[in-house]
Image (cartoon, rainbow, N blue to C red):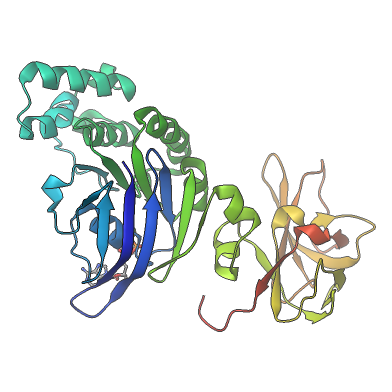
Length: 344
Ligand code: ADP
Ligand code: MG
């Protein structure tokens, strides 16, 4: 189904404006991620869509051509997966997945068939008879997903479903979830504060800050064409090159850099992979730290600009801490964004 929110906002009884008036559309079968730091309103927005939270007057929520704004949660046909899986610990995997179907009063054979189908999809057949307490975190997460999908919801909502897992498992499950969601062929909204997760899972990412969606686009769009310093920093950790712009020349502590266009009124950003250690470079900086990361080194440099500048260095060897190195940055790698007036 298609989801459409118009002018949707939430002010909590204590006056907190958790969500400012927001418009958001999600196409049929599209997987959209809401990405933003803790407290920016992601869960509030998701709960409004689910019907767990009443939005402010003037908000409208559409599922296809149905205005569901006043429809209670149990009639919206949404599937939900949370960080805390909220599974019934002493019931079997099968019973957990079948629970919602039993509530829907489906026939026993129908329940059996549907449960078997999602067990297979989520590769849970070997664990069907086990109690939840006898499963690993990753397996529990898959059961939660299977349970949410079994009643064939119109929309699937996931709120940081991977954040309770440890790092290595999280990465494996992230890729698995990206595949599964597409197999389900369902419209889904995936909330996360982790940019890698959002980029790996979503067709489109809506970046949120302080109760607003500040930019929405494909992962590539957001990465290459951020519309604000906030998005540049949050998606791909762009770093500010603070200096004095004089037309297309940016004067930094570590030398002069050519800009692709006039730098007046703009802040210049660059990403670590575009800062190259290069003997012919126009900039110089001092190596502060060198971290070996297998496929590359991450090198922090001082003296280029006021903050430390990171460089991803793919060579076989890295310079030593304390060494002064020359650096280059291609003009096309620079992102010029309007100066921010206070805030994030
Ligand atoms: P996120 O999921 O992005 O971390 P939330 O939607 O949970 O953000 O919260 C957004 C803002 O609303 C935060 O400032 C939070 O403290 C506040 N908030 C959340 N729930 C309530 C509530 N029930 N009452 C008052 N304020 C709330
Ligand atoms: Mg949240």
